[in-house]
Structures are given as structure tokens and as C-alpha cells.
Length: 310
Image (cartoon, rainbow, N blue to C red):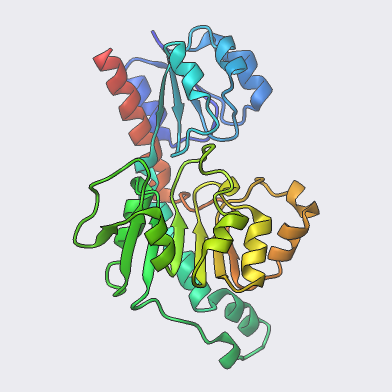
């Protein structure tokens, strides 16, 4: 019998599917890093989210490990290469929250362009200002998407009906263009986009993608959207872009540090908190009632398929 250790909050459907298939499941959703490292030796299957760093050290302690499952899209907190060298399969479930992320990104963009959050606060405090809260429309503008995987593709779909142009770039994909999305190179996307939204994993290539060089290359003011991973955006560069008018607004669901306790001492982060042209949310873009179930379902299906094939 295979033993499963769940170290994070999962929808009950995950444990139910695994038990129905004959697996023994232990649910410890509040385990910290030390507790996971102490317990992992007894399990063939480890289920984590980003709060657990699956390092080579942890993997070595998992002497029975056969599968590591990540409830969510990114695998950047798992040393996948090391795990695979040791014969451990790694799975995630980006299909589960792709629609949630896309809808949330759209909500942030529309809240920004309509000044909705600021005007809501003002009305609640008895202030009635119309002209200062005049927004702008998206019709006729160009939406640029970097990374055309699960969330990038769904974000593109959400723009149908807005009478916009959608261009997308993905270094590792090609042939995905259709009658709605135009596949372009990176330089062309930078040249044409009025909005640039990131939908990439965190890698050495994508870390600090938005930096001083990125800001310098922008030929027109853009709205920047990041619902992917916080370190993709360098906060100092974002602040400079806003101050110089090269970025007219930003939507940030993710930050370089989460929760941002340490960032409170960062002058750039503190400054960004004062910009009404920046919309924040606490890494909840993929956090819906529907995605909670779907993330667990997709992950369970992948793990069970692996064992059927194996």
C-alpha cells in the first residue's frame, strides 16, 4: 500500500480519490518545513504547496518517495531536476486554477482602468469626485501576453468581446496563434502592447524580467500585470516606470516576498503602496471555490494515472 502525506490545505475530493484507489492518506495541512522533513521518510507520495520548499535535502530524507505533487501551477519551490534524477515523478495542476487566474487578472485590470477602488473608498467616506476618477477604455488597444500556457491562454480568451487586439509571446511554444491571438516575437510585443501581462513560471530567465532594461525599452506607456510570480518584477524598476510615466498602472497579485513583512522596510515597496495606479491582491488570483476543487481533482487524476501506467 502506498502512503500519501498531504502537507497543505486540499479539497476533500483529493483524499477521497486517493483512498478510493487504495492509498493510505495522512492529512497534516498545517505542517511547517521542519515537520515535513521529519515525517517524509515514511511516505511514497508527498503533496505540497509553495509554503514547503522541496529541496535536495528534503528529497534525500524522503527515502521512499516516488511522487511529489504540487497543488497549483508553479514548480519553482521543488528541485524537480534533483527529484527526477532520483526517479521521483513531479506533478502540478495548472489546469485547476487557469480560469480563476484569468478572471482575477481581468478584474484587476478593469478596477485599475475605471479607478474603481479609489472611487469606492471615496464614496464610502462621503467624497463625490467624478472628473478626477475619469477612467479609460480598452477598446482598440493591444493586449500583450508573455507566456502562453494554461493561464496565458485563458487570459486571452477573457478579452473576447472587448474589441481589442491580442498578441502573445512564448519562448518555448510556437504555432499557437489563431483567429483571436496573434503569435509574435518578444520585440514586436514590446513595440505594440498597451498592456503586458506575465503568465510564466519563475526561472533564472524570468526572474527580474521587469528591470531597468525592460523599462528603457518600452516605446509607449503600458499597464503591467503580474499574477505569475513576484520576483518576475523588480520593484525598483516598477517604481521608476511609474514615476516616469512609462507604466501608467500595475496590477500585482504576487510580490517578491509573501507575506510582504520584510518588504515593509523596502522604500520601493512602501512607495508603491501609495500609488492609486497600483492594484494589489494577496496572491489570490487562483484562489476560488471552484479552483480549490479543480486543483485537487486534476492532481489526483495525474498521480493515479501515473500509477496505473507504472
